[in-house]
Amino acid sequence: MVNYAFVIAGSEATGGAGIQVDLKTFQQLDVYGIGAITCIVAFDPKNNWNHRFVPVDPDVISNQIEAATGAHDLEVVKIGMLGTPATIDTVAGALEANSFRHVVLDPVLICKGQEPGAALDTDTALRDKVLPQATVITPNNFEATTLSGVEKLETIDDLKEAARLIHEQGPQYVVVKGGMDFPGEDAVDVLFDGSEYHVFSERKIGEDRVSGAGCTFAAVITAELAKNASVVDAVATAKRVVTQAVRDAVASNAPFTSVWLSADNK
Ligand code: PXL
Image 1 (cartoon, rainbow, N blue to C red):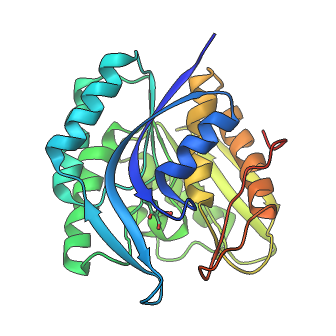
Image 2 (cartoon, rainbow, N blue to C red):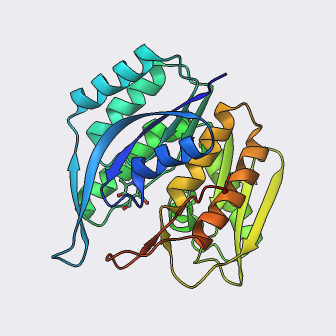
Image 3 (cartoon, rainbow, N blue to C red):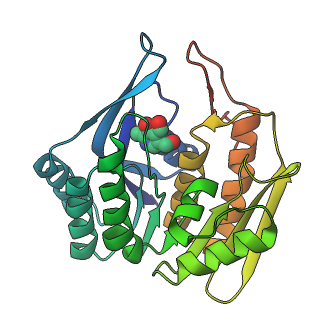
């Protein structure tokens, strides 16, 4: 039996993040990956690796979603970087028109190449139109402070409070990732399902952020949900796979390392 997972996300051409990582992750977890591209990010090696960001025309995004959902009966979708209010309108409309069993939202809020003014509109649109349709949302430390209004996430109780406040905005399951900004030696994530909190913790690896960790985390959850895992089990698998992918991170000429899913990391 083949299980299918759909991703609507941006392309990041170095292969370290975005839809490239999502589709690699689906394959790794034995799920047939299908993807629609929302925007194209091309870092600039001549200019400090700054993000060059180009949105895909909303009609072209709609056409891709039409092709993907027309060809396959898709139950589970991951939403990655959207990037503009127009893209968010298009994707929110597609989520309303298709009744997915799970919508996993990685709420990518800012990208360095975007104007700050535009980014604020984008954040507001994401919060108003996509967030309430998510069944699972996976904000990182910064995204969780923005979405919850909790100023600093420094204790497990802070992570729980942020998760509870984001849950009130619609998503059934909220996973707040403490990440590198969380004090101490452990990378701690909290899942809130509306009644219970589940804490996932692993030792931090190194001192620097690794590109693609957030994308991989949400993509593993999506793949596991496509195989009918429970959300709690899907998050546990994501924590394990991402931790190993960070351990196996690969360097490049860019000033950051990127996650790598080695053959036995499933
Ligand atoms: O990691 C966040 C992210 C997601 N999607 C795309 C990106 C990035 C960060 O660079 O470029 C397309």
